[in-house]
Length: 270
Image (tube, rainbow, N blue to C red; front, side, top):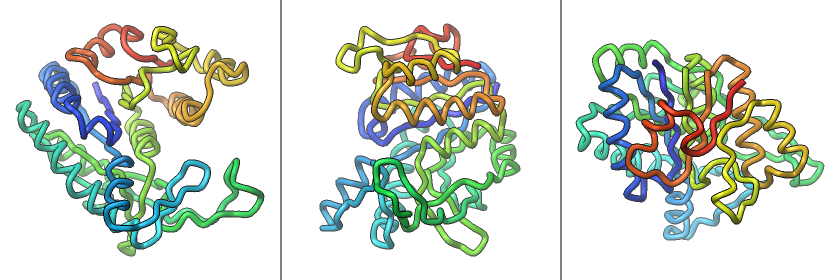
C-alpha cells in the first residue's frame, strides 16, 4: 500500500509530529510504503518578520521574491526538514530528508503571470513560485526498496538549477496522483470538512466527489477548504483511492483513518 502524508508547518512545530511518527511506524511495520511532503508557512512568515522582510500575499498565496525564496529554503529544506526527520528517527523510522533539487525529486517550472480570483483582472507575477511537472519516482523507489521513508520539503527545481516555492498541498496531491497511491493524508489545522466552521462536532465523516461539489455549491463548505477540496477531487479523478483531511492528531488517529475511513477527519472518495 502506497501512502502519501502531507503535513502542514503547524504540525511540525507541535507535539503532533511525535504522535504522527508513532502512527507511521505502525503503518510501515504493516507493509505500507510512505512518503511525507511538508510545508512550513507559519515558520516562514515568522522568520520573514524577524529578518524585516515583508510577507506579500495575493489571493491568499505567498509572493516569492528572491529574499523570500531564501527564507523558504532556510525554513523548508533547513530547520523543518531536519526536525521532522529527527521526529521520525526517534520513532525508529529511517527518514531521508529531500527537497526539489535533490536529484530533481520534484520537477517544476516557474509559474507564468496569471489572473487570480479576488486579485483583480490583471495577471500577477508571483515570483519564484513553481508548478509541478513531474517527480523522480526512480529515486523514491530506490529509497523504499532500501527501507527508507522520503521526507520531501515543498520546493521544486528545474533542469537549469532554478528552485521554486510550491504549495505543499499541490506537491502532495500531484505525488499521490503520479503514484496512484491508495491513500493521501492532508494533515492540517482543520479537523476535516465541517458543516459549521465554528462547531468541530459538525464534521462530515465521508464525502463522495459529487457530494463535495454539492456542498461547495450550497455554501456548506467555505473559505480555504474550497480550494483544498477542489484540488483533492481532481486527484481522486486521477486514480488516488481516497483522500483523508485530518486535523489535530491524537495517538492512533492516522492508523484509525486507514483502518476505519471516516472515523477521523473527512474521507473523500470517488
